[in-house]
Length: 112
Length: 115
Image 1 (cartoon, rainbow over the protein chains, first blue to last red):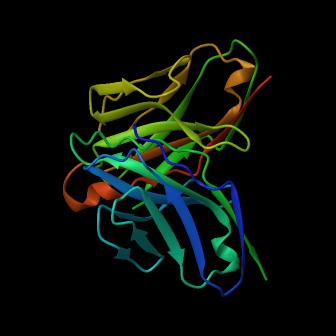
Image 2 (cartoon, rainbow over the protein chains, first blue to last red; image 1 turned 90 degrees about the vertical axis):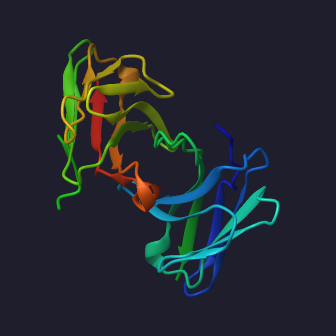
């Protein structure tokens, strides 16, 4: 499974945008980029995913580099509830077995 | 829908005891999996299943057994608990078909302590 690299931690102020980076230089052509987050004392929850094009949903936006070797999760206006560990995960698009391999993730702190 | 449910929420075992962690989902998902999460760490995949009667090993399968006799249930068995198995255990499920295979749903976790 291709690996991802994320900063250990980031800080943001409430109501400001947050850009969470992820490097995945060994990504293959069929790998999807998934983001999950884990709030304190809870199981992970799905945030967003993409393949080549930028994606938006009600929670966040995902910006994918043209060469797909990196991506950025964008929270447009951080709230205190967005304080969590954010995981960037590559998932095989072909022969999908459903597996998700988690890395260390980025711990996001949001200051009032 | 209840989603993914796990029981018990908390459990304390003595070294050498056995137990089964229960996981159930009511979304008719083909895929189910078990993860463990040690303090300050990311999740590590223990075992997974792509359908009833089919299971496979993940990253850290030693000391754990699974079976999948129904679509809904995916129990995780600790045969002889060891202190190194002290962790929080998460079960997850997802569909494997169509657009819905993009999202995995996680249970609330079981916090296990082995003395």
